[in-house]
Amino acid sequence: MKKSCTLAAVLLLTTGQPLFAHTPLFDCFDNGDSTLTCEGGFSDGASATGVGVRMLDAQGKVLEQGKLDAKGSITLKRPAGEFSVVFDAGAEHSLTVLGDDIS
Amino acid sequence: MKPIRLEVLPLLLGAVLGAAAAPALAHFLVVYTPQTAIQRATDLPFHLIFTHAFHGGPSMAMEKPQRFYYAKRSAPGEEIEQVDLSQYLEPIDWAGENGPVSAWKATVPRNVVRSLGDYQVVVEPTPYLEETEQLYIQQFAKVMVNVGGVPGNWSETLGLPAEIHALNKTYANWTGGIFRGVVLGNGVPMPYTQVEVEYLNHALDTDNNRFAAQGAITAPHPSLEAMVILTDANGQFSFALPRAGWWGFAALSVGPAKEYNGKPLSQDAILWVQATDLPESP
Image 1: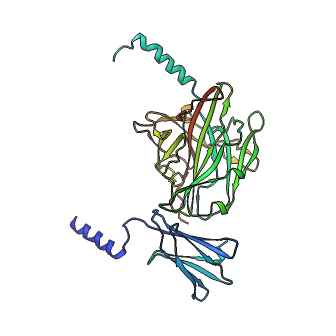
Image 2 (image 1 turned 90 degrees about the vertical axis):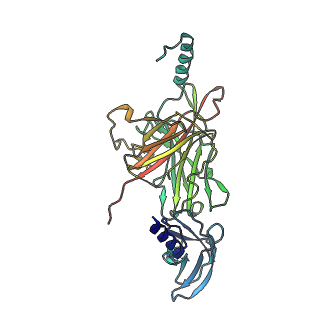
Image 3 (image 1 turned 60 degrees about the vertical axis):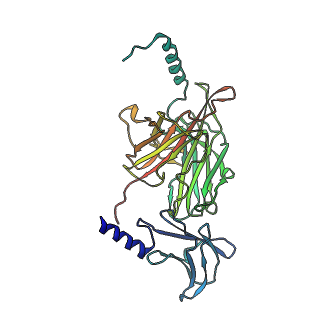
């Protein structure tokens, strides 16, 4: 029992996350005015406020970046050409949406 | 067991007659959309049909609902927002046993339901007069749609006069899993109240506005068509969903209003739950 508690404490300290399933979820929509709105969240309902979002071009250069607001949302300018948007909530919690999939 | 006193008999008789004046079993306001667990935002089609769910009819004429909307909380800590969807309602003629009856459809555009999370879609219908019983029926019906897997306000009640409080996500149930809910009348749990459970047994042919003639299953006994279960002392019920598809739960006459246009009124609570088969790995 003592051993398992210690293990749990170590896991909490190393991950900073509760020990239940916590899948990141992310999607973007074209607003029809040369902007995109992206929204993120987690499968357990945890807030994604403050999670970093980066827009990258085809070469991986950062075009724009910011953090999700209190509604788990951010609005970015839609660039010309190929791009992607990354939801970066840390290791194993990163998701990418390709620009071609954003309509 | 104590013998029943004679002076109690008239009360019991009155209770039985009162129960007999309750709405006929098996009326269901079907609020149908093909899939409630949506991966990415898309236009959402709805069909609203007042019918008998297991038998796919007879269907009853349905006036334009008093309200058709969704309730959504955009993020934890944010207020629940109600978005009116009535502008998307279109009248349709739905095939009935004695000719078409009025029903409704709506295509809710993607940009209205594009955000991740839960949408509690609510229909508050105009009371329907059941001519044979001279009784009005008003079924407050809920169906939930989730976009993208982010949970939202699925477990929250909306303060409807008659409402079933979901204790499981209505869109995330494996076939065979147990669904639980609490029947609320004016927000108060209703102990030992009947809950009807019916399978939406006839597929909707939405191109031709009718139910499929052939049901998916054949019940060997009437008690397995419109099943009746009771809530417990806390107003809670549970039901194992034996087959993929749509299961309707109805709690009758639990709302506070008992009269409409000078006639008895039954305010019922309806909740639709979708069960999904375990998919094989590709």
